[in-house]
Image (cartoon, rainbow over all chains, first blue to last red; front, side):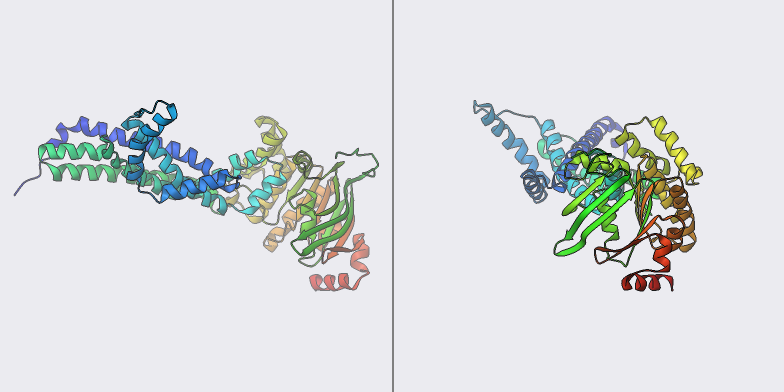
Length: 230
Length: 255
């Protein structure tokens, strides 16, 4: 019977580390793009901006009904062709695997975050809007200082679970031949024949990072708990 | 259309003029041909059975509800659909709600500071000073750094009063300010309101607190089914209401 040998992990540490860094930076970038764009998308729907709101609704519906992996393929293979057509000379314009990953994840997550924020916007008490009106606050100040901060506080647990899913989904970049944490571990595992050790270590890494994120939000919530209960 | 305060459209002295006001919610007429004048420094108490249109009337005065007919002139500015007019009126009209509507994610002080800074454009220092002063006035200065949810209902409503006062309005509207409070907290809010009225603030209050009306109201306006039925000074109104509907109403709330 085989015994477990974790020395492989110590030896290949730098490679795993670079994979982890890629996963984390992709998560961070997709979170940032997704939240900013998602908030804009949610606001467009919330204010029912003519034409634009319809387009956004279709966009969100389409993205949410397609697997992420398919969107990655689309971007990677179709975007160069589309860009080629747009540039006029008809030759595909390659955009590279990394750029594809960052753009796709950002656009994809924006659809999910926008749904979370859209629902949150509807949950804000009508009295809050009336108080803002009575104080002559402009629409911008109302949303910037009163409405959105409350939405983000209330929605933070759902935003967090979406972000943890995002972090785990970054492993899909293997289809673009990019190496994230799981990808790095897989390659090493197959190279060395130490699959069990590698997958155990990676599982623990995912577990630690995801639960650390949960803890972090839980403590933030506790700090702001006073502000959200009434 | 801005009008001269001393001009023809606004008789001198009246800071709020409501003429032939009509407000409908779909097929339901909430306000029917309302005429009301509020003079500077006056305190007016609006009362009447629920659904009589009192809240709707004061919500029209700062355009939280949009009226369908008639005119409203506040401090020389006629309320139209122009946002500039609406906002200049809202700057001069403070409002206190039945359910407080404090901003739960901001501290008491921040609740008071936000609008003066963003709307009036005063500095953070000035806003903090003003908030401190007015929170002291409503006797809640020591709670400035707490969040609304940490305060009692009565304290929250006094913060709401201070928040409105921080905009330095010329008129204060009160929409059933004590209806959501436990009985023992009603008094502290009423005391604050009495003080304000005695200092000469122009106030329009929807309330059933008849003790308050007797003490400070210059005029009691009784409404029923969207119309003003009776207007009188409080003594006359409570002692000898002219209409049957007012008599019936007074019997119900005093019993």
